Image 1: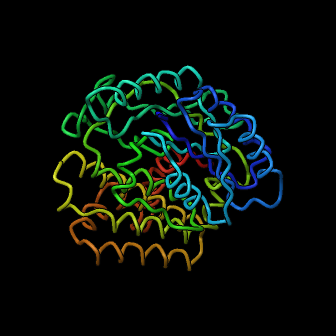
Image 2: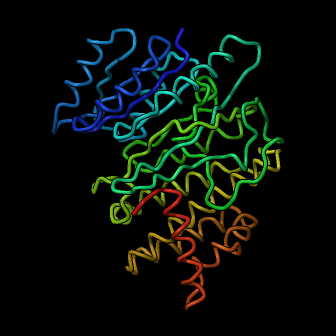
Length: 339
């Protein structure tokens, strides 16, 4: 039995995917590495994937598909996962070996024990190219450490502190049972991946180790600010989908509701900031339409986000609005790590 399935979406990733996969091989036979070649045509991604499958049978598996985007690569990984737990590691990122072993030790306890763990959370490092100090996203102020806990045990998430895809390992069956299906040919779906399953999570465990190394620095990277502005329609699409997933009546726990609203707040802020910084009337009109979409969908949620500290800055003219917009921009930078 595999403890953990790790999907590695690859699209023309030959220049860096080996570093990622080599870091995952530390897990040994208890891990399966699903290398999803998402229709790569410009380099040796497909060949490298096949070589890993040949050299590490039973651990690495190469899966080739027509190009469907990052979300469809994650979907394919999930469909093919046989591990009790499921993780996504992007092909330009890697993991820390010691933290990896600690993660597997923790998962092993719940796989072979009597208690069920739905979501394991660990820290991640913003591995920003050229930065001498690597910023760490940790959850020490928000989550109990080294114990099984529920939403009622969660403390307060501070502004700028979010559980992202880099932080989480979900129980595989939970993802399948909640019907997770990411949209094709769409960037920024990692937000849906970590957000949609949250109401189905009953038990969590926070391991205070710096496991995931999130690389930031490629000019063509999806979190480069200019790239994000160019793909603003996809950011807006993902934000609307997440607004659709939020149903207060189906989320009985107050702390979970609060966290999910805060996550929607940052998604609205990021979308608005990108529109503002693009400087085009077309994108400003799209920002206005997004807020109208929210208002029509849920007037109470619109009130909460529109007149919250950050929401005001996305919609106020003049110097005061710009000041709050700048604060929102800095939090957005922290959220995505973009530059």
